[in-house]
Length: 309
Length: 176
Image (cartoon, rainbow over all chains, first blue to last red; front, side, top):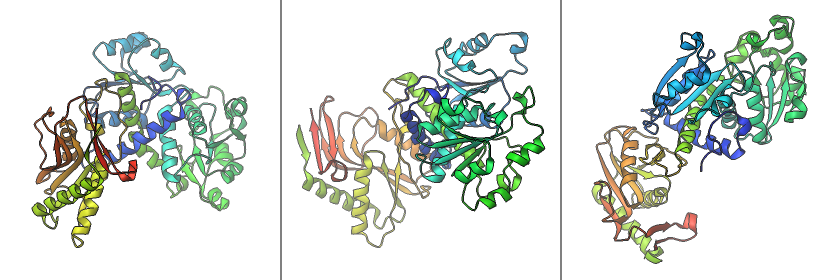
């Protein structure tokens, strides 16, 4: 058994069996993380570089921990303070790193398609840690893994993806992943933040009414408003957004049902989620973070093994 | 194809191994059983269940260990192994551990198992129980403490252990 892909560039390229293999492997890594010694020697002959051209807290720490727990050597590169500011190209930068005998690349980039471009020019496996507004595959995998862990299954479950769909790589990867696993997906948000083609292209339901979406859903995956990617204002103010699309205790209580609340972080408290919801029993936000390490270990392990076979 | 142990012989052998364990470990107060995933589990389940019948008052601790992440052939072009469940719900610190696997061949699995097990604590001692010992084929200096049957076989031959639960009948066979 191995993955059908050489790189993890997006969920779009994966088969359902790939996703299930990653989950199966991640489940055992999660057990490793509960042990007194939370580390295995599997990748001790592997060196991995984390190339981050964009800011990150969770993803970067999560990848680095996953690599260390697998016994790999890691090096970190961030664009700020590097020779990128002197005008070095992406391929040159990465090739220089690889010539120091590095075996895998984890990359985040603000340009959509940057890892796909890189994959055409280098030989080692690449893990996409988020590219622009395209995909963030490991986030979608850990989200789906967390849903499966919480609800027992994904097939036939109703998942609402809420908020800034347009600028969210998490949304796109989640849609691909959940659809491949047989879930029903609804996206909800202001019309200006939902791309027009989404319904027909990806087979998801679209609604602009948050209450309606939550009433329907088993799980709400709430996204952050990405102000840094909005060049022109797409809604009038954060306050107005919070009133129309923010999820608070009162709204949840009025649904009179159980619903699982997820968020990929970082949370804008008081905007898309109020604190009493983010910290409530409905929320599995911190479980997502915990599962992130195990899921990334699985992805790294399977890609490293793929390279050899 | 040749039968090494038929169903009846297999059952007698497992009973005998259990009595040997009791001889050395009495009530299993300081002793724990650990079966190796995936194939050793069928044997360790049988041993655990037989010991419970023989020692109804003893509280025997029994865990399962997967060694996939400790293999020495990862990245050596041998394909990728899918991991199985590990469940060791007790401390092995200062305990006498009995590792259980079905076939002892090169010894590499046991080497991995020792590494994997030591990440759970420092046992007082470790013993190895195997159903079939393929002697003269070891690649590492590892020997069993309890053996069901010792056999000589060519490298080209394979030992297959069949279990009622999985294969519909109990039998150990040598396949050419």
